Length: 329
Image (cartoon, rainbow, N blue to C red; front, side):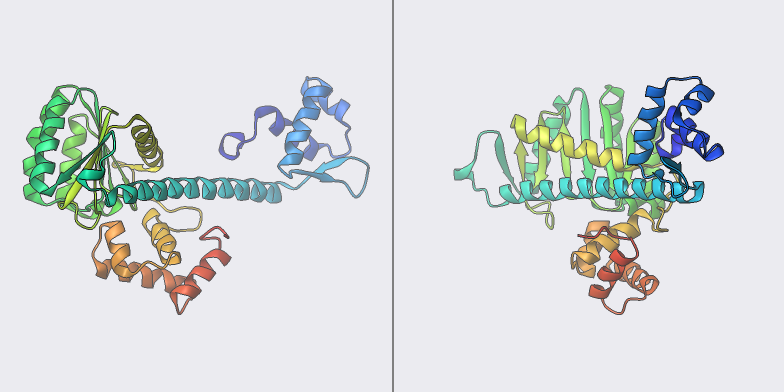
């Protein structure tokens, strides 16, 4: 129980002891458990903070709440912590989007130290070739385009093989939607067999490539990644972008894992749709964030609204909070 629900061994032992012997005092419980009264009191403090002990109505002191109520309390606390972690990840994504927006209006005359602007797809490709040639240790990538085109896959394979044979660590986060593309999954499995690491998330803030934790390339516009990009080399900026990648990577699902549902019965993709609906995103915007077609985005939104019994997107947002699908703001 303690491993799954976060109780340390002594706190669990004290909780079990107070359930089995409700009339017993703390001194007797300490003797029964073969420990000191101080240790038992520390465990009691922990259990009280978790609301697993409450004042008794029959005698002085505390009593242990029944296990069914206690488990609900612990699971509710874990759900709150999970929701807080999800909000933290989303906050990081928003911060990244703001960082990108800050650079979106840059012009050559306004360049700052650590910032280089690339205009057009040819400049972008040339710079990426140079980065790939000089890469030594690691490349971290956000790939938000969804399913990969077969011709792009074949063009990428020789480069991927060369990097991995050189000992470069490759970590890439793709959208969850690529799991529905057989040829993309086959490519990612091939990549994994060579030593590449792949995970998926429902949505990504932008396309991003970070090389050796020293250089990052991000598009000026997420809607038209070929139009232009900025190359960032400032230490502070790179630290923030690397932290963003690590946070998203930790929350992402390894490619080999089967996509499951959370305690609310929602897949990771469905949870993202709910969050995007609550923000007022259109079907087209949702489709872009998830890497799916607008038709699929409409179907996902309609299915979730039907499950919520909502007749409008505003009502869906309200009901999502009421049913615990979204944290109350």
